[in-house]
Amino acid sequence: MISNKKIYDLVIIGAGFAGLYSLYKAKLAKLNVIAIERASNVGGTWYWNRYPGARCDVESMQYSYQFSNELQEEWEWTEKYATQPEILKYANHVADRFKLRENIQFNSEIKSAKFNSDKNHWELINNTNQLIKTKFCIMATGCLSTLNKPKFKNIESFKGEIYHTGNWPHHHINLKNKKVGIIGTGSSAIQCIPEIINEVEHLYVFQRTPHYTVPARNKPLKYLKGKTKKYMREPVGYDNDLFIEEVKYNYSNFRLKAQNSVAAMALPINHQSALNVSKERRETVFEDRWNKGGVPFIAAFEDLNFDREANETAAKFVRNKIKSLVKDSHVAKLLTPDYPIGCKRLAVDSNYYESYNKPNISLVDLKTTPLEEFYAKGINTSKNHYELDIIILATGFDAMTGTLFNIDIEGKNNIKLKNKWSEGPKNYLGLASSGFPNLFTISGPGSPSVLTNMIVSIEQHVNWIFDCIEYMKNNNKNFIEASLKAENEWYKHNQEVSIDHVRSSCSSWYIGANIKGKAKNFMPYVGGYSKYVEKCDEVSKNNYQGFILK
Image: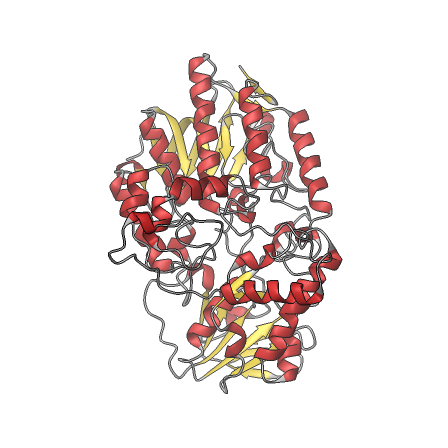
């Protein structure tokens, strides 16, 4: 239970993967710590995102903690891409195995956090008006944890059921023989649609912007079944044919490859340019990547993310796939993006495009027939009325800053974080912001975060933070703050490296384009995970250069 009579060494906000590992490290350091979690259990985004078809787009053998060899050895993933229930089960296993629950207060939400400069501590208030005092605060609030709920006209007038993919009910939703509308065609819709199409009477997909997706080629993971270790192969990047024991036997090398990569994943690296090979060779490489499945498709050639002409070769390949997979040419055209591939987060699917060949699905193009309003029985566009029993909002999240802004965070001199970041988030290394002492953010804006394997990035962040806290303890420091100069230089660098990258070439949630009124800045660090780690290590080795300690 929370005590307002004592000052905690550390309060962690959130009990997803970042919060759990932060709590593990804090207990290891024997800190007086508590984690605050608004949900009734651990798991973070995997607690809330329970929509049909929800699964990770990073291979399960890589989307896992590496801080404990015993944990790596004992946990058995069942599929190449783990489902939401299995990932949530893993999070619960971690919480139980390392006895973390005793330091978590569930069903508690931080509403405000104010730095008391006189006493040099943070004062937090939760949803029951409890006061929580702490020397350090870690924001493990997640990048995709605040829903984007567009203000559709007259949405309250709809008499049927409305669900958001990011806050799916815990009970079973009966879609059988129902007329269902789904708004959005991003990652969650791409996973959800193939799952529900065989259950509903009719599905209306309301699309504003088409999305690139590549097949996952998901399948059960394989075991050696009696073969001895002498037959084991070392993982070389991404390999569909590896057995679980082979990955585990070589986990240290596998993890090292991820650490030295751009995206914190062991992927097959092709150092060729898409423009310096023959058309036949290019098509062969794309076809091979398509058949193997997953996000490695975007790494088919090393220049796809930087050279627009090279990128267009990959985009054209996928457009042709859409044309071949979707039987109705008009529908195929509507599903075909006209922007660079990889600009928006590349989705991974199981029979998404093929779903549009079913007789009980209709694609509604909101660009040509905009959504005008909800009414009692469904949705009106500028052209038609759609009678619906259930509406699913697959409208995504207020990414990276949304949850931070939901908390009234006030630093020194009455500076509010929301006001300071009103023109875009500025911080140092994505870890700390000037004016907000002893406050750390994990996988937030300014860090590689959502452009990487999140769990690897989380562990790196948390390790850096706890090394910093240990350094402060050993050097009799109790105050750390990013300098304004270091913060401005990091922000400038972050924007510069994003200019030529495909990620910044269109409207996406990476730049806040999906939220009305949100400042348009490229938020995650696109310079690469390994380069980012080098910079973090350089800062700590130089006595936390760019930070003010006292």
